[in-house]
Length: 348
Image (cartoon, rainbow, N blue to C red; front, top):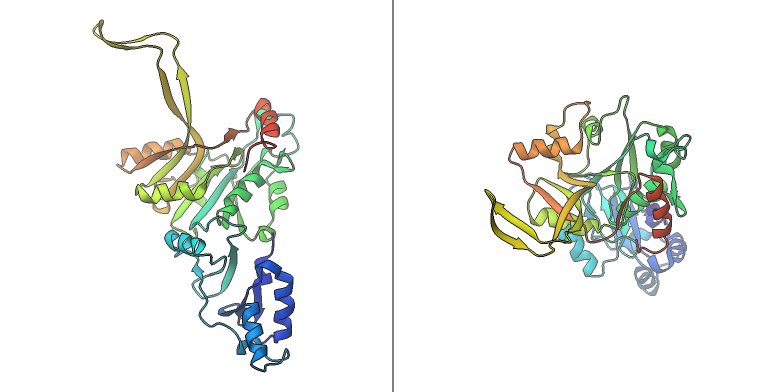
């Protein structure tokens, strides 16, 4: 993955430097001209350079003489997903991401990224992985490899594929290994911050320790889930149905090999011949409005199911999002072995 800073060029650079960078970027050849504080001034392409040279400019002249002064951009924390889709479908392939001070904090490339969702992602990675012993005696479960990379890295890369670039890792058991492996996230063009659990806080309790989310929407996921979930579709469904909280659910069909009678006080009302019933189980991936996190008790043991019960009691809208794709909870040895085979066949 290319570092987004490869697309940045200081305003006082000369045209020759721009040509060198554009040549290096090859098919992704676009530069964003920034001032000394990395604030966006304009954009620059091969075509701009060519037109400048035709007008008589020299390669030693400043790029400030040939830039486009009003480039399109997205603003972090204020993004409209419809605008993201509009730009993507309008073939605006590479866009800078600006913070509130107009500083370029990322560059997205729709050749490599499917979307840019206005979401913070929290990955719960503090568990002991007891059922996967002895594999987890010296390695935290999130770092066990599925194929050529750790389970947790599959999750990070999948989320980053949809433009999520603000991550929070909740860690405890052997958390130093996770922090050493992922670091700040710079090599993936994301920002990773760490939340340490002094005591186990359940499947969502550690989120109460985070006070500075970047966005109004928060996604919480288990670190040991392997999935090809379409996070943009999940987010759009959440927005369209105007809910407060959504949980990815896994459909399970149960077939009854006999006729099932429906009775009242012993009297048969109807029956179904060999029916199939569909049930939905918790997939361990949740999307919520940031404001619902006010229901989390501060730094206390609290499971996501506790939060769901609280939201239902408060009259909040809780959505089930049935997953149509692949999902596997890598919790037991047989799941771990299955994942090794599936990663070679399932399209992620």
